[in-house]
Image (cartoon, rainbow, N blue to C red; front, top):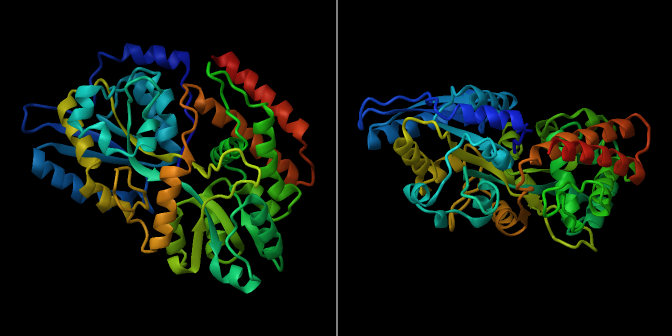
Length: 433
């Protein structure tokens, strides 16, 4: 899943207010010939692949409504910056995909259209969405400024042949996962692969492991609590996969995205990976068939306080408040979140449905689909819905990058080291407000 940092500063918010009177980049010369500009995130195997999948749908939307949609697919390395620039410059598209963990930070800029009662009704009503997915749309107690489009969740992928040869069963607890990984680490094969240099993935697992310990990253006043025992112990548990359990190749400290770990799994270099369901595309492109691997929820420790296996990952859809084509934009959001479009895009984009009672179509493996649907609906928790969530990812995630680098170079990282670094990060976030 592709979630990136978002720096929602006070200056950004102020600039956003100044853009309120600026027009969106769409145009309208009448009810029948409106045009929208849509920035889509990269969900498929390439930007061109996204265009190939989306273009027929956009043409169908034009046939139904008379509204032409000008599409631009933007890679994840650029999307955040493009959105920030759009917010400050006023040169924005009408509709844009966002990582759902950005929702509260973007909402705080004031640049996005709230889905109030009328807007929500125009897109088919709030009741059509899975509640946990819709809960990622913005800060609690406020009308959301984004709605779910593509759902994602983390799972533990395991190589069936390696497990069978070792006489192992899929792990149901963290302890069983580590034991299996130790048994399978031999002869150049490692038990697990991690994207240990990806600050976003590290931040995700800081959140999940902390949640399993019953810890929160922010208190009820949105003040950071990164140095609490639950957070520190959860992160230590994750780091120890490389440090003390030695089931992760130290070379993973240079893996700055999840694809490298997925490729190791597909080519038999590792027995397990912790990744999101959209890894299926990469596994398939590496020649690994869906019956060669199994998926179980990310195991929690035996003494876990919460059986959290993922955060509610995914992509949301927002409308810029300064659009000249609000009605057309809402029609487009309704179209993209319709059961037909969700089913059409679920396979090529390897996404989980965000609509109630919809069936996952991202895989031909019914057991895998059922497992991910259960994780997403019942074992996931939203990342903190606070305007400074992006700062958590940026500070804690990058501190974990450094921890893994230290471990990979032969150093050690203690609980006190983690607490000290997180206290510094916590103070930075608190000072930023």
